[in-house]
Amino acid sequence: MQIAVLPGDGIGKEVTAQAVRVLQTVLGKDAEFTEGLIGRAAVKAAGKPLPDETFELAKRCDAILFGAVGGPGDESGPRNLRPGLGLLTLRRELKLYANFRPAFLFPELIGASSLKPELVEGLDLMILRELNGDIYYGEPRGISVGADGRRQGVNTMRYSEPEIERIAHTGFKAARKRKKKLCSVDKANVLETMQLWRETVATVGKQYPDVELRHLFVDAACMELLRSPRQFDVIVAPNMFGDILSDAAAMLTGSIGMLPSASVGEGSKGLYEPVHGSAPDIEGRNIANPLAAILSAAMLLRFSFSRENEAATIERAVRSVLAAGYRTADILQPGTKNLGTTAMGDAVVAALQRA
Ligand code: IPM
Ligand code: MG
Image 1 (spheres, rainbow, N blue to C red):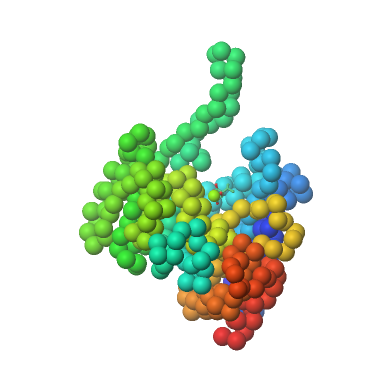
Image 2: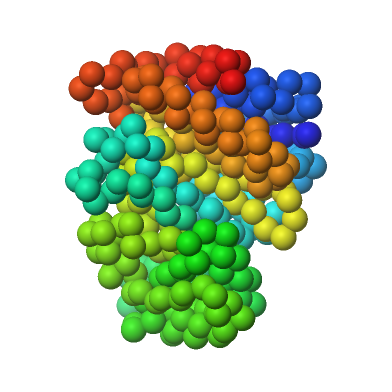
């Protein structure tokens, strides 16, 4: 098993190190890890956010373990030097169009959720974010000078029917394996692209009569997610709305430090990353929560290598560490023990060794 490790920036480096330790513990000599540069670190060292070497590494490997990219100031400056572009290019070039972001609440973390326990108890929903289209990639785009001599910004929300169809199929299939409920999110009341999204998802839905399909406008979906999240099973969303909804869903699970993700396409290659950012404010302090990265490693085993047993073993190890009362600062609760990033990694590795 060839695994590319792209830690990126900020706490990405710290949490990825713990995920690699966990994979080494369960895989032993079965896996070979090769590190590559991406993001800010790559701009600094190689002048671009996705150096050719990293791209080649990612193409060659079976799976990519990713940390986080970016830092303060990313919103200004030339687009081709933005750290996030490294990640966006990988997603698109490798055709990883389906991004699974499971919002699962470990019972031990119920008190850390942003919602009252009675609203989130048993929360287990899957956000499926389309990852290769939408306003993230649509052309034309850019900042130009208009006829009045003032600047204007342009981005284009664009989806083709085949792009919507393939993510819709992924959504229905995912729902089939769960509670058979799919909620499709759009803004069809305002945007033509989203009207096409809704029509296309509904048409694909005819092939899945056993799955209950519902459509929600994104503002209503956001409200429902915060009001009564357990009504959802699988949520399928266009790229940008999925980005936003998944951060909100993370808070319901106790912390953004708890949300893992898997980005896959037609083959078995996948990119696995914690949903949280690079958190430059806590970089280098050994306090970041590595559990989303560790749970992403479990998704890597499940999605890219069909190693369901090992994936479940990692998830159980995380659970047992939480049950033992160990927490990082972001999920700390009265009566629990505050561990640093590496100590949390130690605890998961120890639990795996006992398993
Ligand atoms: C995410 C992130 C990225 C995105 C950024 C870093 C480009 O927010 O994966 O959710 O917007 O997709
Ligand atoms: Mg995001």
